[in-house]
Image 1 (cartoon, rainbow, N blue to C red):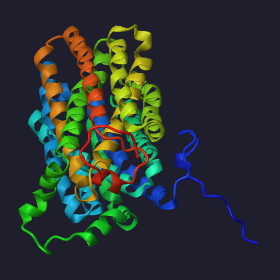
Image 2 (image 1 turned 90 degrees about the vertical axis):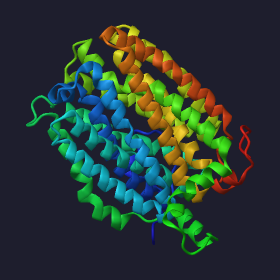
Image 3 (image 1 turned 90 degrees about the horizontal axis):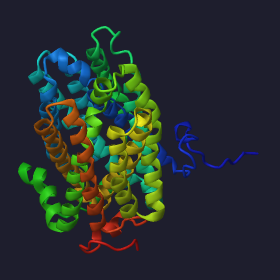
Image 4 (image 1 turned 135 degrees about the horizontal axis):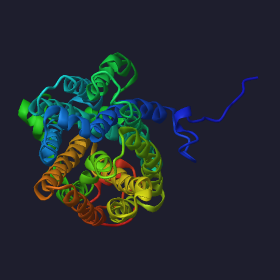
Length: 439
């Protein structure tokens, strides 16, 4: 007699993540694959945040000028906006594989940089593909998950990929004893290239994209410029108000959050005298609190709605930003973890809305729009830090007050339609409204 067992989630979705809904087999497979790709993107992102105290003196970057270089690196997101429309023409899978290859090569090149200019150029190149991979991981999960679990799926994607940030923190603890120091940590970033054959065999194109391709009624061939830029034009003409609201939330939340994240390692090592191992411990312990923001934010949005959960996350985060910079040293880990928790909850909702509010034919483009505006916000925030902070005392005040800009990002999320529990086709075909509950 054949034993019939109820479907169960794989090991990596239990029990740390709580009462995770049992997902269809196809959704579990997709989540595991794209989360693996996102793992390496988060590893690279964590490295530049953690190793700044070692990178800057090694390359001869003055501390007061670091913000300008970091801002320039963030401009790699502009190239992401140009790459993602190709995913609406050539498919999510192809561009995702290209992005994994590009970010791996860029990270490897970073290990050999000898000047600030070389470092900036290598990181701009890597960042363009990192953000492309992150955006397409989001699109793939949105298109493949059932409507009632999309928020939970995006939360799980964020936390599984975010483990790359944690692994980076663990390895960074040994940065002062590793041969070649921080360069060895960047060299590890070449691993995704070795996994490309596995991704090619395992990752399939999304069903929604394939169906959209079959239903496309345009001419059989079109000029390369129209093929490339067409999705951008279509998105802005079809849903201008949604694009404006998502852009506003992205720009303001990027300015409000980037400074604290980028300068955490520098701040605790410079002001509080922490070692790299101390910083790593904070990321692991505080990050254990922070990552739950993605999980609970995603699940909460499936129950209470995207707009209210995302807005609350962004609006509460500044409280813990001020506590981090002006509170007692004994609360550094807790306040940092709670800031990450709130910001992560807002961020996962913002990313969900950027994909859910637009049609399959330009969903890659809409996530590219999100990243373009976030890039401008990140760069603006870091440049403002560089212009207003010439001492460590000024830096702490600037970073704390910058988190207040997150309030504007939270309020901007209230200007988009609710998407909780709705099929993607129903959302994209709805009129251009700026509110309302799920229907």
